[in-house]
Every structure is written in structure tokens, then in C-alpha cells.
Length: 83
Image 1 (cartoon, rainbow, N blue to C red):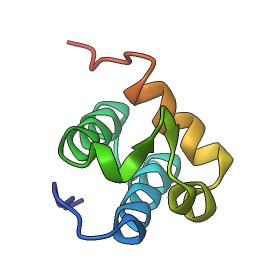
Image 2 (spheres, one colour):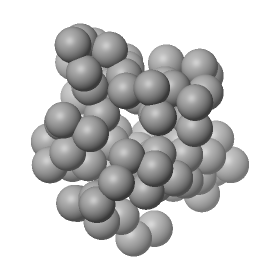
Image 3 (spheres, helix red, strand yellow):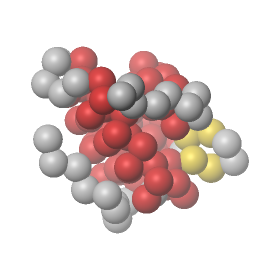
Image 4 (cartoon, helix red, strand yellow):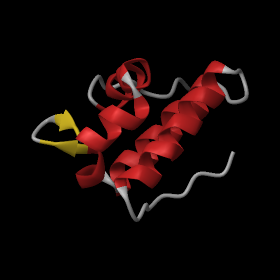
């Protein structure tokens, strides 16, 4: 799965995050790849993902609660890749 590191709009970012989480749920990528991709996207696009400690409205509308719960655990919860 190819993931860009920088996104032009919040909508593009939401589509990419949906693809990453859905690929994990469909067993197309493993847990380590999920975590690494989400962390890479967040590191390079923090202002498009979070506003005032919460996900942007566009991400909330486009991604939905279940996907954002997974993403939140990865970026805020300190989930790390196992060695």
C-alpha cells in the first residue's frame, strides 16, 4: 500500500486514513504497517488532523467514530511498533 506523506486537503487526508484503517481491517496490511503509516501521516500533517486537541470536523465526518478511535489510540495513546 502506497501512502503519501503530505496532503493538500483534509478531505484527501481522510480518504487516505480510511484506506489505511480499512486495509488493516481487511487483513491487507499488518498491525506494524498500520501504526507506521498512521504515525507518518500524522507527523507530516498534524494541523490537518487535529484542531484544539480534537480531530478536525472534516475528518470526523469523513472517517467516522470507529476509524478515529483506532487512529486516536495510535497518535495519542503512544502505541508503538513491536520489535
